Image (cartoon, rainbow over all chains, first blue to last red):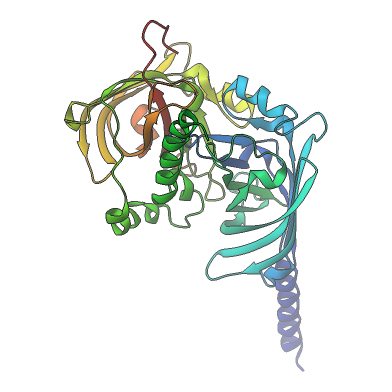
Length: 195
Length: 234
């Protein structure tokens, strides 16, 4: 093997190593300032109000080569609950709804991640709300994975939706006039540490 | 069951059933759609149009209930996420004319102080002079200029939206969700969802576009009721 060939092979080998490093699972920290969990219900058939859960903390592990090896773990502090109506927030924090004194956070932990066509994923997991854990499946769209133009850190963004029955979490008061079914829409942005 | 309880439950059951039958309300599918432009609810609505029962709403002037009215505005952030803010504390009136839809109208004031964002510092930033400049422009307003029927329980509402002192024409796609006696207030009530798309740069709020999308989606839900005679509105 000529020195030139050796150098070329070495270069290829290094490139292959670099590629495999890039394909390894990446851990992203959720950015609470660009993560929104919106719950929406129907009120007496008239309106479809929403509330938000903000201050979301957690991490997303995404493996582009082996999506099934991906995972997500999130904590939603009840201090981040915001229905846009202060008096209603106060009511929601009480024992007949979220009982935030006793249950200050909700959590979601994925149990299985499945790649669907295109940019779609199915994420099964366990949602714990008011101390009650139920299986939940999220329909997820990968919006974008790329270095963030501001700081060049690897960044990933998803939207996700699901439906819940609030009565399954001990918050069925007012149903069905106020719908038991609650639609959840999530948008999130998460960043990995700089290389 | 006592007859008066049945009478109370019937309109609730009807309105809930009607709400359940209709195609997904506009806000529901927005964030998950991979191609924002493909999200229009119109094709689904057309397909099921025949199955939708027309909602009969009483003519009258309905006062908007700020505690059941959301104006959610969402945008795209660098392609990664689709955050939203809410304009709350809406104040206004909906005139509904069942016999002559074109005689209906809506007028709403959105105080900028009612804006809520995910984080307080972001709200402060948005209401500062760089953005909405709440000190100089304390509220946004919407005044309808034309209301047209657009299929069963659907309407097209043209109007003038004023934000930060700039007035632009806007068209809302509106769905009548339900109407009937409000079970607690015992007065005629009505509820709508509505959506539209705006360019924030049209209102002098184009900073960071297009990395942060110039296009913003607006999803409105509102509930309004006819104030009982002799009681202060609200």
